[in-house]
Image (tube, rainbow, N blue to C red; front, side, top):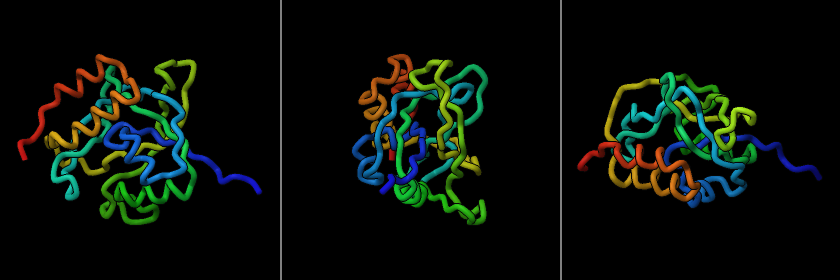
Length: 163
């Protein structure tokens, strides 16, 4: 019996939370921290579930978004798609996110590029403010994975809504 194919997924928002990832994707195995160059963290869509702005990555020369790469199986990728509001083959405007392949640098090292899936908001209505709770989930995940201190300070400085 052979094992199911594995897919690399780059988490930069609330899925930095290891507990949340394991709950949705029991097959998830952390590969390591990684950085997506020439992008910045933004909150471009208001989520009905979170009732606040939710994370997105948008192109921005010279900026960087840190996260973690997980290896997951295809079954869990389907579960993650559902949770992120993405259905392959569905009309774009009915999806919350699109799943795109991005090249990230494992451990921030340009000698270790890896292609990983990331969820990107296709219709950027924002900016919106994240809630304190949502931002706290991102920050706790970032601290758990020991993302760079400078990046943690950047996240801490993001203004939140008062909802």
